[in-house]
Amino acid sequence: MTAQPIDVNVVSELVAEAAAAPSQHNAQPWRFRFLRDSAVLRVYADLERTLPHIDPDRRGLHLGCGAALLNLRVAAAAKGLTPAVRLLPDLDDAELLAEVGLRGSASPDEALARLYPAISRRHSSRFPFRDEQIPAAVVERLCDAAHAEGAQLVFPGAWHVREILELVQDAEGRQAMDPGILGETAQWTRTEPSDVVGAPDGIPAEAFGPRQHGTTAPVRDFALGRPMPGRGWAPFEKNPHIALLGTDHDGPGDWLLAGQALERVLLQATADGLVASMTSQPLEWPEFRWVARDPFSAMAHVQMVLRLGYGPEGPASPRRPVADVLDIA
Image: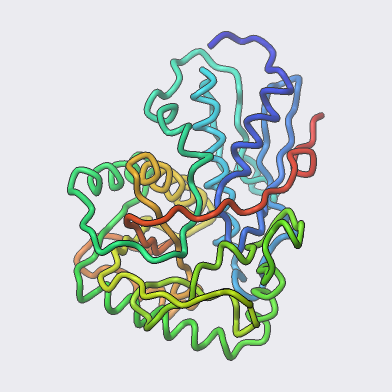
């Protein structure tokens, strides 16, 4: 890559791809600022989009912004760019999460560039998956994707999967008794389709998926008992493929690393023909989060529970316009 000025249109395209990342309740808690003179793109936390009851320490916010950062790196690599990333560059500014230099001389990361087509195809699927094994080679690629970003991905054994499912149910029971959590969830989830509501954020009705017959898969029911005409019931897979994504340490920098690893795993899964959904309920309570660890792995801190498999792709959730999240200075 040459040290030529970066076109503003290219920056807008990079931000559009970054903003396709998943985030808790699709709150999209990020904003970007491009500094023309230095060709630096800054990633900020949008504190107006926090979830103080569900995510009081903002761990989930950092995961979402880390996922957006990974998408930005993938899109940059696909354009032949080599971004230089600094996490938490100013410890006195809690909102500034990363700086991405868009000038450099190294060769683009080809492994990241190959994931670019998956950005537009990756959507959470809260639908039933088939009871079908994931080939060992695919599992290995997913674990390698997490490792490449400084995290771990572990597929626990059957007994621990059952324990995770029980933790999810216990966490959902607690949340059902918490007015603050219920209110936040209702605020960011819509019981009508996106083409009716027209909101640029949150989870639309078509992304909820059907209600479960039984509770065999860790899929959060965002309806919260609200009426949704036409929403049906369905049996889900009896033996869900659960993976735990985790890190050695547990601070803001680790959460940003975990977010990048999470998105890299999701993009690799998409490229390999898998679909996925995520659940964080058992990680939103400290006592449950500790139990979620796989005792047979060296993983110290679980950052996300993933459900992976083969099944229908989820619908796209709405996204805010680039003009709403990008400032150019």
